[in-house]
Length: 383
Image (cartoon, rainbow, N blue to C red; front, side, top):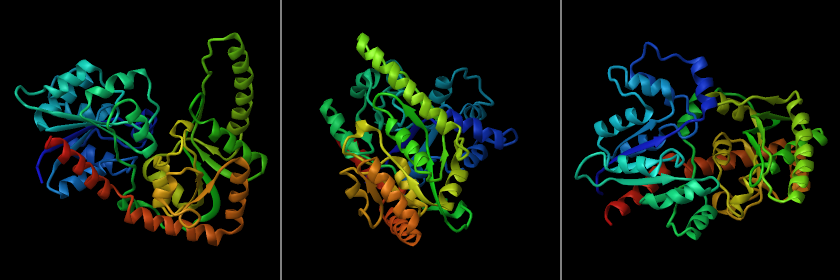
């Protein structure tokens, strides 16, 4: 195996950072102490991949680019003025052979050139991860990366249509989370943790899902926010239709926001504690994923042993055994019926959740993801 240095540059939800620093102070900590405190909150991917790559003998680390407090802690005794300057100093100190950018909206072509050429005479590979809708900017940037990873076979296909040889690198779960979560019995309750962006190619299906449960008086704890966006239409007819649609969706949003079971976003260990205490987690993907599946919630919920009810996608069958490890629905009517069935049969729901947890802890792990990423990079470095 070829040895190399891997540096990931990533971002974190601003809302999470705000929530985290309301509860945690790093004023008297060193950079390394502040870093360890931050990643131990287990938000999203944390630094799991890098822990396993280090076990494999790979020098690997991550920079949380938009974590201003953490980055300034690294910069305490220097005078680098901008986030990009601080990051470039970190790059030059670490001397990576491969830079992994997991937020491809971050950098311009000129900035990518500066990253690639941080050291004269050194050939640096740049790889990226992208698992959201392609826009004009991301399309224009794809060719600047040596490898592109994405979380679904459907998106691999989508990228290949753009002429990019994308590779599958799925989301995952880490067993260390289970050691941080309170030991509680699951209540026969339903949870949906996540935001809803209402607009073209976004989460209107989630809005209808939440509305259906309200209409059927199925109690569901909704941890997240709804963001309603007006669609852009060029024609007068299109604008007229949009006004009607926007008004209807606004009424639905008002109903959901006024529900007593609607809470704000939760993150990190707190998020996993809530998942652990609920029997059923509902899920849906954005329409643009087409037949694909594999959003992060699928692995977070199953990793916690919570029964997952998710939208019917062809790719589900590659991830879990249908009706034994997860339950799927094809439309709102089936969603309603299967949700009621699971709530009326809590022992069966619990059995399904435990079977899914075993699959996730055996297969959908960050350790396996690290092995897969290493294989891709080994391939890249031998070209």
